[in-house]
Length: 310
View (cartoon, rainbow, N blue to C red):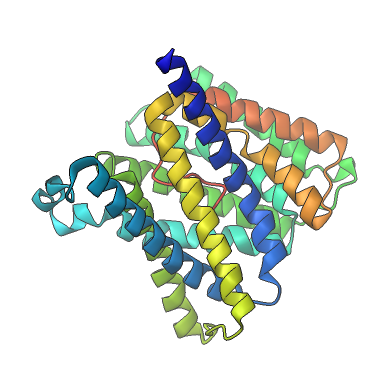
């Protein structure tokens, strides 16, 4: 009985995480107002990183009464792998992904971004010195068919080529992040890694903002409230994701997480009056099915799920 209860608790936790991550792109666009993207990603990343580090320390105290000593045996590069990949891979992915919202709807961007598992399969095959298997090629063609349906001008939807390119390049960066981070952070505390990635994003975007002269300091209380809400959503999403993961296992968790595009469509329609046409819904279904089957074929545990790009 307790096992069944634990399973249902895990499902509920992952569904909460999936709903939050799927909602964040539309929520960010809705709340952002005129705040520059560099400011949003910088301060949200730093705030979310602080929250995740605090939560990680709390979890360590509850479970062990002290911080994990195993971290001391790792070299600096290994202990801070999340920070490194956050700066070099996750931050560029976020900038590209969120910039795409200026050209295409958030729900379409999330759906297109889910091409990344197919890219991961090909990267893993290339790194292993082998050709993609027939099943992998079949899943790639399924995802490609979904993308054609999502972006087909014949559907009557408004689709901007610049936005599509930005999302695809973001998906490539994220796929690289998955492959690299999967090796570096597999046995490190996930909340700590999430905090490092978020701080890495904040530092990278802050550096870009200072070099380009676009970084500002919000002065309105409403702006900081908006940033705190976003950081809190991200922290809650990451925490519930990993609480569900330990109850369900990697494969089941990732299959549930495939529902993110559906939440993106619902929240985008509610907050931003976005609307996909019938052919795009078919494309969304194909992409989601491709992701689910790809996950079942070869799952890799992620340090941070994609559709939020934190």
